[in-house]
Image (tube, rainbow, N blue to C red):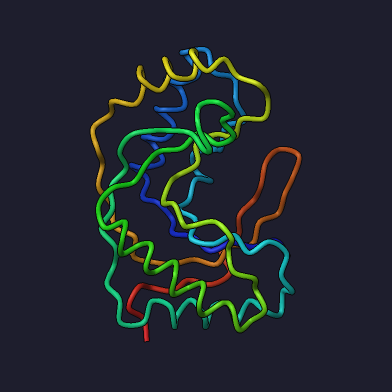
Amino acid sequence: MRAFIAFDLPPEIARLAADLQACLQRQGLKLRWVRPGNIHLTLRFLGEIPSEQSADVAQAMRMAVMGSAPVQLGVQGMGVFPGLRKPRVLWMGLGGQTELLAQTAARLEAELAPLGIPREDRPFKAHLTLARIQTALDTRLLQAALEACGGFRPLAFKAAEMILFQSDLRPQGPIYTPLARVPIGAA
């Protein structure tokens, strides 16, 4: 099964994401938009794993957050990966306890390694993906759209429950099914 580990987002963050996507569309951006209800704070994409490994992954998640407290975060600003010259992902940025979030991601990496899940080769960068960019894009149009829509008021939220999701890719878009939920600080 295809799987990933993420934090779900509160409804007000999904509403903000939908508003930002609508603003960006009004600016003329034609991208592959992520459905607002499918936007998550992804800690680790696992790729294809055996379904019987999900219990071990859930245990690794519990170990990674044991003794931790929920992470206080906030959405703020927008940008693109890897950069404006050849953008591939348009994202909402995160502020708040991002260093604590990165430490949680690093502990999760360490707990997943004994399961044979290769370590991520890129450093963890906290973000929420709004869209994927698959074709060449006028960078001036993109920059103007980011400036027009990116000045929103920061919105705080708490990352308090890590979730293992199964991802089923469908022509109409992916369907994410929660397989395991681990509250932060769970024993």
